[in-house]
Amino acid sequence: MTTLKILIITSEFPPGPGGIGHHAWFLAKELAKRESIDIEVLCPKDYASKTEILKFDEESPFKIHRFRRIKGLTYVLRVIKLSKLLRGNSYTHFIASGKFALWMIWIQKLLGKKSKTLCILHGSEVNLSNNLLRAFTHTSISKFNTIISVSTFTQSLLPQWILDNAERLRVIIPNGLDKSDFVFKNNIKLKGVPALLTVGHVSPRKGQHRMIKALPLLIENFPQIHYHIVGRPINQKVLESLSMDLGVESHVTFHGSVKQHQDLWDYYRAADIFVLLSENQHNGDVEGFGIVALEANACGIPVLGAKYCGVEEAVKHKESGYLVDGDNLNEILEGIQFCLNNKVLLKEQSVEWSEQHAWSVVSKDFEACL
Image (tube, rainbow, N blue to C red; front, top):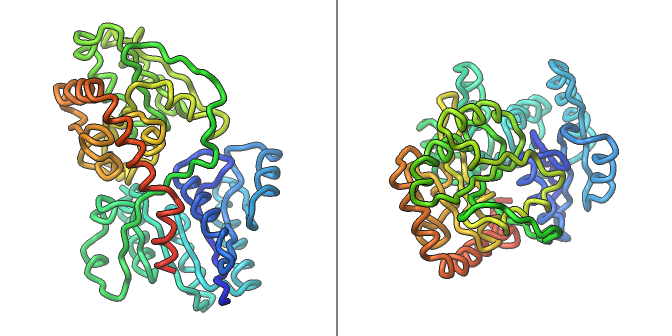
């Protein structure tokens, strides 16, 4: 049997946080189950302790190569590490995921390697605000044999000259859902009737501010409503100030980050509605899909999602949740009312929708590309 030797280079990877990193981990883990595929990963060692990283790598079913982040030297270390791997191995395929990983296509070209190259586009890396970096990134993307986007929305961000290039295979493969750590460990109680939940970095792109702005109207209709925010507190102080300015601070709780991804399942299960009102940012930071929507659905929780971004493809309107204009307060109210009034039906349909995105299903599309 012919063996494919694949190197996945990613800008994030567990045990640290990040959607791109978890996408790369689940993809690698699923492909590694095939006897005909040999997987290796090149990624940074950050956002986790040395002990956690060593333990994670030792337990991994495939080989993981890591480089350190040392400010400006990070790029140099990345190039050196990749160059050594390419010289010492005969990879048949090269998969890049994340902005910096896309740029590494040039190392492959300079070394004259003939591996087939695939890139995975998540959204924010496509339209960088810096003109020079955006042009360089687009040129890098155009050099890959296959361009995989996680959504139609993400693909639409590419410049027309790349979309018109018939030599490149363009494919849309949505994010996959992995439930291998689907375990309820703690009986978490989230206060509020209803209890709303958002999981993700506390940042403008994730749109937590949109829900906070809607709370004054929502409180008029649901006096006991409460909004729970789980994720790295990058923009937390700004949102705390916004909550106080609107007089809704008693209806908002920031829980911070969880230690492990599996800890999120307890939060999902405890919520009445999951909220993902992602907002496209002027600097090009956008939501390409929204895997957390599927994770909430897997727990039978409907999703209130934002239109005009990749979330539209992660939420099936009126079946796994409700799509709204994130700046339209009345639509947000209507969406919450719909989810609460159709809770039993949405629970069943949400689980079915999530199962359609299982990695065991999604990975077959990646295999076809390989």
